Length: 297
Image (tube, rainbow, N blue to C red; front, side):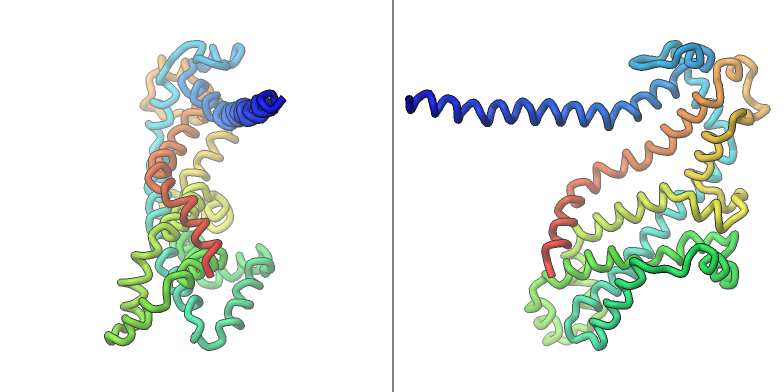
């Protein structure tokens, strides 16, 4: 009887692992397949794809969709602007947000609770799109590249995560540095910032993905010219455009092999590659940074 109970108890974890593993595989396939489907369409001949789509492999393999999209000058303007926007915006956002977070983590800061309450209020309430547009226009930021940078310099949510992380650093380090004559800025720069690398990497990933995927600012606060068009706005235009305009430098043979749908799939793949390349390098900090920032304080 005892041996039977032991066998049943031993089988329960195995059964759970099998069910859990099966569900995880199914969820993974559901998550991955849409991207795989787009990849298949990007390498498919336009007419063959239109005849019945493709599910596992391209009906007729071709690189023409990528040749067409890569020959578009507006794609490269969009890439340039998006890379500048992401790099500059993420870097400055980390600096400004971390400075405020460091100050908010110091209990001796005057009016600390009041500042925190005001900051939290702005997370849930805003003036609305029209007043914000009027403000952007009044400040001279309309159709100005700085409209991508200045409004995103500070994030209350990121500040809370980072200030919680700073608050968890032993205060003895701060006191020892003060005794040695270090200034607050020196302590922030030389002690707290190096110790906060996991949280900073997590926030940098959030900020970078947000900048990379943003198209709303381009649509509302610019004329979407060469100096302002971003990759996601360009991608939205390619996807929504029923008849994609192909450049004159493309040979007729290539033009016959593509459709607006397959070209849009190729554009999606090209726009996704940079984030897919960057994410693995920051993934090891991601979970740790969230847990540490949320639990400390």
